[in-house]
Amino acid sequence: MTFDPAKHHRRSIRLKGYDYTRTGAYFVTIVAHNRQPFFGEILNGTIKNTKMGKILHREWERLPRRFKNIHLDKFVIMPNHIHAILIIDNPSLTGNPPSTTETLQGPELLPVSAISPARESSPLPSTQSKPRPTGPRPGSLGAIIGQFKSGVTKQIWALGGPIGKSHAPIWQRNYYEHIIRNDTELNHIRQYIIDNPLRWADDVENPARR
Image (tube, rainbow, N blue to C red):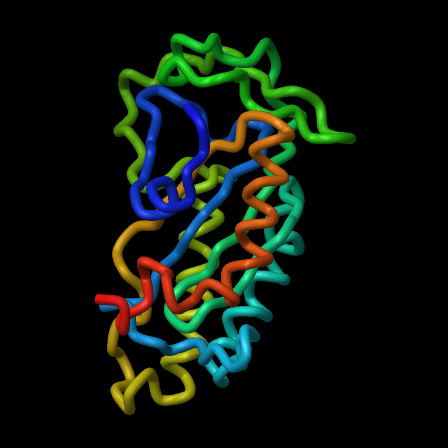
């Protein structure tokens, strides 16, 4: 499955049964509520952050302090969304990567330099008598993104909220993700992130384009 930025940053690909605490590299896109340009504007191919954009930037860079098993790669703040590559390094998992059949017939999950290959978790004790926990699994991609979105929202609300409404929504529900599976794809996505401000006029998230 070849990475196509025009498709893959617009839809979530949650692989059924896939463990999103697994070591690997993930390309994520998080979009502002109703695609409103809360975070900045593009001037001569460069993003100029608003106060909310600066909060977003600061909170993203703080993530490795809160989640010791992650590394930040390329990321860019756009007027109404963020693109980023996030690397999860989870040495507590053991075993081999899932087969290509288990990952929608895609190539093997990308092994990142200095990070051990993806592993499967060991079986957990029976919990039949206990209720199933709700929400994303601790340390998973969903938990990391949820923490980020929540942290940004609380700080923006503390400043009076967007458009002068203290509890107006900041984010579009959910987020988009793509599992990066090889070095070629990783480099392609890195370049896509770097070039994104230059391509704002043609960006699918640009309200003017709609």
